[in-house]
Image (cartoon, rainbow, N blue to C red; front, side, top):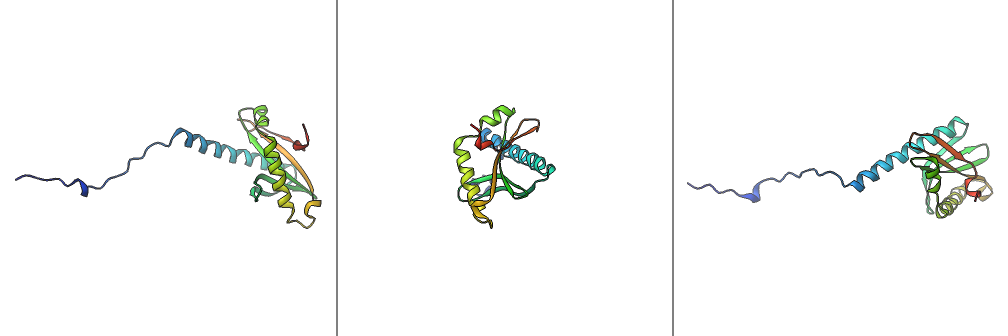
Amino acid sequence: MQLRFDFDRVPVTPVATPAPLRVRRGAKAYQSGLMAEDGVARHYSDRGYALLAKRWRGKAGEIDLICRKGDCYVFVEVKSSSCLDRAAERITRRQMDRICLAACEFCGDLPSQLLTEMRFDAALVDQVGRVKVIENAFGEN
């Protein structure tokens, strides 16, 4: 008697393969960005600001944090890197323009619309979680 094996009927169990390095780095950067934004949100909250939105997205783009103190709305771009100087270098003119457009879009829904008092800050976070806020960063050269 000869046995025949039908390979078409054998269930195939997928083997888990490790994620490519690029995917793992992207996931790590995403989590690092969330932690940096949380640290910056605490920084503003500790100074009496109300946190209105995290990662607010409009047609023009995303704003990392939107805070308010009194009548002033503060739009914050959070950048993290190994050191504060390197984080600051990562903010481009194109990003600033996009954030300004998104902020105008956000303020367009407020009662005072584009007459709303606005400020654009850069919040820099290093690898150990130190936060440095540059107020009115977009106005500086």
